[in-house]
Image (cartoon, rainbow, N blue to C red; front, side):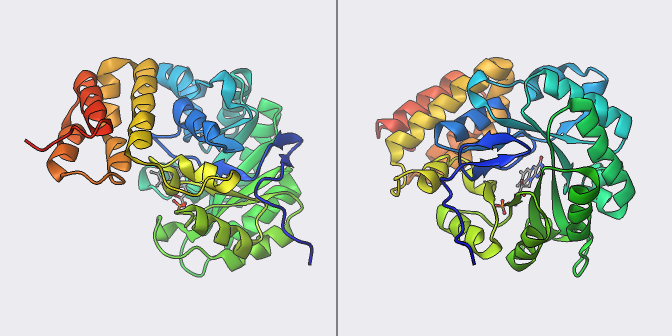
Length: 331
Ligand SMILES: Cc1cc2nc3c(=O)[nH]c(=O)nc-3n(C[C@H](O)[C@H](O)[C@H](O)COP(=O)(O)O)c2cc1C
């Protein structure tokens, strides 16, 4: 059996060179340009955007076009993930994303959220393979870029419809890579991913298979890479507040960050969020980011709570500076 490449070895998706095999997974409401840029700064070979509505792009929704599709010049290569269930709209959205600088288009066929599934998009596409194939072809024609698909293994326990669809997407729609999350939609994000099934899929398709699911730490990602025989790994929840996981997987870094590094990074995030959406919206948006960083700091709960509850960026910056300098105390 041929030896699996190192996670540091480059590879290609549809002719696009990815400098290593460690990627940031798509994360709705999170994976904007600065979260992707953060992953790149720490060594990720590529980052995939949060899922972007194909309808939002097609109908010119301002935030969809100008916030969700914002790409930083240092991010490339970058993949923009689209969701939707209308091939014409998907073609138009892929064309817009290509025009804004995407290097790859990914289609979401894995989202288990009822609001998305009810429209026929996300994981619901596993139950309509013909439409799924049409969407992939439409995205390729519309965008002129390589198209990848991220999907789950099935809908219900025991169902392999995602596995079967993945093979058809490659063979019949020319999809350039599969992001495989071997949990069924019913499981949401819980339970053990079926890496053995992923291995079987990797052998069955002639394009890269990128494994997702259960990659909660660098060690877990390495194990999943080996067990699934994947061509690359996609880090999702394991990267939240912890971009160091990319350095641990692609560089020499082993030790976790200390309090100073954690707070310096959080200060960088606060600045970028303000740049992205202005101080007021950023103040509210960042409240979900703070716990990710604070969970790794040994501090009284009261101090953590104060940061998590503040909507003002000035006060947030003060608290972060106090924690950084070891001056934060509970009052
Ligand atoms: C908050 C959150 C948002 C997510 N958003 C997306 C998304 O927009 N598109 C997508 O394909 N998967 C999305 N996922 C799934 C992840 O990309 C990944 O497949 C999943 O979290 C399993 O990986 P993990 O167990 O290592 O976290 C999301 C997951 C979480 C937790």
